Length: 95
Image (cartoon, rainbow, N blue to C red; front, side, top):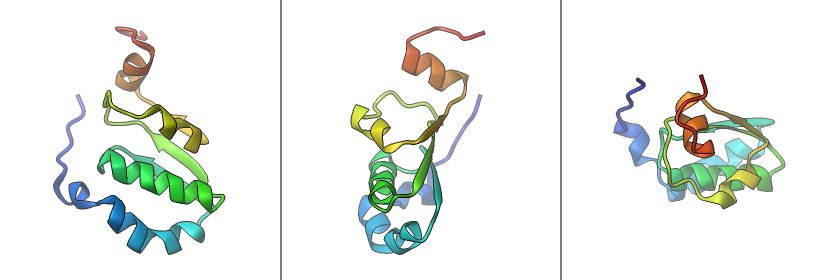
């Protein structure tokens, strides 16, 4: 079992990403995001990266079931663990 505690990561808002991350993202070649920050912030980060031509990697952990379908076209590479595969595919187990 993987356990996360939001803490400071939970304070990263889409507004924070837009105000502080755009310059960094524009000057990057690759961006890796995951779901340990709020989903809306991950979505905003991916949109900025795509707008800037940055290759995006999405680690879909920890597994959540409310990922909007319009997030996936912003992702070049997706990385999932067994819980995410089961959630996205509706399988009980992949083993």
